[in-house]
Length: 526
View 1 (cartoon, rainbow, N blue to C red):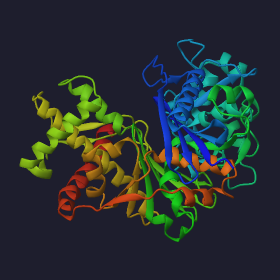
View 2 (tube, one colour; view 1 turned 90 degrees about the horizontal axis):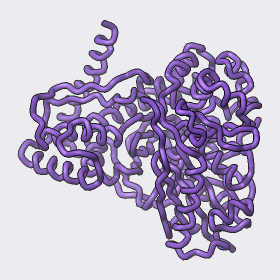
View 3 (cartoon, one colour; view 1 turned 90 degrees about the vertical axis):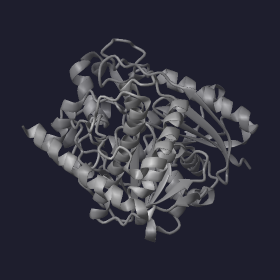
View 4 (cartoon, helix red, strand yellow; view 1 turned 60 degrees about the horizontal axis):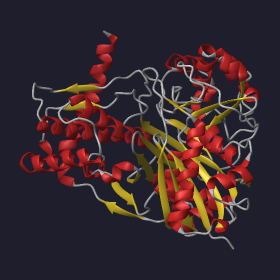
């Protein structure tokens, strides 16, 4: 019996593939870059064919590294960013770009071109907003589809398929038009807990009444991990796998990370509301699970069955996190383009400076990290960043001080979201962190000290791939259901306790952080 699965994770800048065994061990992992087009400010576009090619290269590479026989890979699943793929009636790429480039058929999740359309959705006050924290985000699909119809009517009129990126990959792999309960519920205003998931009156209100029919969106979503069919011969050849490999209904990348670090609690849901998944990278997503629906203002959800089948999920997030640190480096201009080595050099210098100044380093510098809007808990895509306490100093050390205080701001933003969740009924005291930030010692220290939570670093080499592998194992029939797969494949983690002596410093910073939000509101009103 085949005992291996393939997991594919498509992020903002690359596709990653892993081969895992049935106990969750990662045997081979390969990453390949994907292209992005930025024709205008707040516009970001992918080429879905380029993404598929990168996926195929990554899967073939992971197979080679793992030395697993392709015939022994029983299942594959995909997670991806919540980007919007548009195809014509024959399934060919259809432009979404103002540049007119036909290859750019995908609006990237972080694209904010549809701000006005998102505001219109919010103004509708339709009950779908009850499951979005009351506010529509431009990062969701409805406003992007409204924008497409208004600004590129030719593309709208020719459209025959609309996909969330993970569902597009499932379609490329299997030919199935199945749509995941995770993608539709989280980004398309589908209400998975109701008999009629699609709310036709909402689409009619916002001017895209025919979106379900035009985009060939399925009437019912497929549960995460459902077997949607085997690989087609063409896809099997491209991926280096076989047609005996089954394809599982996938999920959005951050939700795969949540499954990878929280899925192990599926056997006992009584304490699930104490745990939060923080998927921290370019942006940050905070995922909280509960047995009953819990909503919070400025958050997304509660969503039913978008990770574990018997759980509701509420999501908060920061539109920029790691990307903000890159931006600060570029903006300061002291050292040039950010890369791994430069981040380490800055971090090392901060550690040296803190030996003399401690946590009071640059204590008069304060940052609001909303440089790309505030996703949670304010749900204000128009929010802007603020820096208070600048001087004429342009030295490398001044960059280090600003970088440090930006790290503090990012973690205070996480605390802001945690407070909103706990005020509504969660009891979160433990954060399970995965993503690129686990490599940043400053952020990992601050996530514990600035929030007061126990911070658990996943033992999995790649928790997002692990979550997707759990889905693939379910589709392949290696386990009877998704909770069973999660419990069998969980990898555990390494806890870090907050430093009590740091509490007073960060409590003071948090009071200033909240006051800066209030003062920005006053200035905007003026």
